[in-house]
Structure formats: C-alpha cells, structure tokens
Image 1 (cartoon, rainbow, N blue to C red):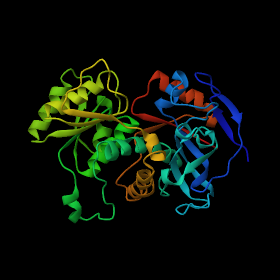
Image 2: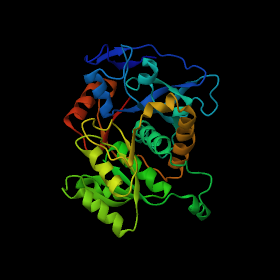
Image 3: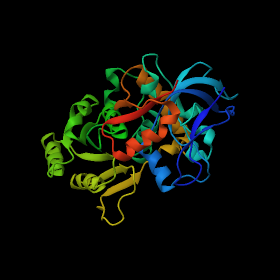
Image 4: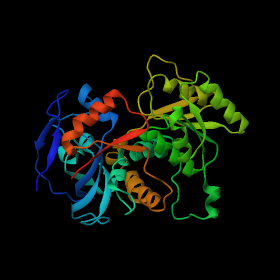
Length: 348
C-alpha cells in the first residue's frame, strides 16, 4: 500500500507531496483509509505563521472520513470495514501519522464516530473539527449540561435548556454546527451571518437571523430578544475577528451578563465588560485533557445524532478535485476567502 501525503517540512515552508510509511495503530487507535479529507482556515494559518507545531516535518489536517483498515488491541467500538469520520490529531500529538492530509491516517478511538450508510464520506469529512470545536466550547467552556440521548420522548422536555443563545458567524462550518447544537439543547438561537446564508441558517435551527454588516445589528438583536421576552446569557463567536468579539460581549453585557466562547483570544487592546466571562475553545482538547468528553462527543452524541437525523452535516460542501495533491490549492482558496462552504477533497 502506498501513502501519498502533503508534508510541511519546516515552519512557514511550502507543502511537499511525498510518499510516507503507513503506521500500525497502537492500543486505543485505528488506522483509516481516507475516502475524503477536509481543510480548515487554521491549516493555512499554521503553515503561514509557523504556529502550534512543535516538531517538523508535519502532516497537517484535522478532518478525515473513510474506512477502518486496522484497530489496536484495546479498541472495542470499531472493526475493520467500518465507515467512520474522525478528528486527526497530528498537531496536538506531534505525530504526522495522525495528520489528515494523506491517504492513511491514525485516529484515536475516542475521537472517531461511525457514519450511517446515508451519510457520504464527503459529508463525514466536514464534521470532526467543527464538532470538536463547538462541543468543547458549549459543554466544556460554557458548562452547559450534556443532553441525554436515550430519552427522545416529550417527557424529556423539562430537561431542555431555555433562553437565548447568540451565534456570530453562523454560516461558517463551526457556526452552523453551533446553531444546530444550541437549537437541539432547547435554546432560542439568535444567529448573525451574511444575508445570502440566512435561509440555510434558519434551516439549521436559528429562530432569529441578522446581517452582520448592518450598523444596527446589536440593537436589532437586543430588540428581538426583548420582543421575545428572553435573555441571551450565552454566545458562541465562530469568527472572533474584525470586531465580532466586541459585538458579542456587548450583547451579553446589555442582557445582564453571561458567558461567551470565542475561537480566538479577545483583543488585548479592547476593554471587556466585567459582567461577561470569555474563554477560547480548542478542538484539540478531545485528544488531550478532555478525552472522556471526546469519547462521549464522538462515540455517543455524534453517532446518535447523525443516525436519528437530529444533526446534519453542515455547511454546504465545495469539492476540490485532485486528491492529496490538491491540498495546496484548497489552502489557497481559504486564503482568498470562503463563505458558507467547507472545502472537501475526495480521495480515490
């Protein structure tokens, strides 16, 4: 078997297409033959800025889906031939064998989910990074209770959350997942994104949708919450750039205070209201200090939610043809800007 990979040889260097060895999984790992991989904006930022990586050369990428080729001796949930999607952990583990941008990837059992037959590999590939980012943010950072998937009856209604939940950047891969998760938990979702994505965002569960370019966007959100007789105590900022952090905390502050989870640090040159607690979500935690949570998120929540169709792959997919060799092209597309789409590279 051959394993073509896009390798970053050193910090801020150019990706090189190379042939790599194929490793065997350790006790709690799986070897996946990738059928589709996806890219994220953080991938080109790691390449361009030389951040996060401690050891080179490195195979980047976090999103894979494909077929299980082999399992480690301690793996119990998966077997050879299973269709899966998983969060690749090369950066947090300093291990290129665990990178997504190649034909074969090592995954941890606790960060892998079986895919129903009706979910295509291309759909599965867009899930891991966004699900991990949102899951860590909502359940770990914000401290919101995990849902109980075993009870789908109306008797579970009293266990639902209530009130408003603000998602800024709701049409992005992370934002669209945040909308779905918050909605499924029972929150009324207030979503901010480009008008051309408003219909899709509503279909993911948003009750109120706002244009981020509107000069009155904050006032519009506050007015909608007032008319609905709701308080917005939680927020997820999937952008965390170009003023979004300040807007998010302003809404929460004017609602009496609460918590906001960000994807980047709050700007050091901006003043944050004292009644708003902010934190940054890190997807990599599912493979570091939150492994038990990762197991629940991928092995239980994601598998169940996909199977019963209470969660759907989002956002839309833009296919980049050419296999692993096309990874540099995909990262260039991210650099130029992408809206409401996730880039997926099918592999032969």
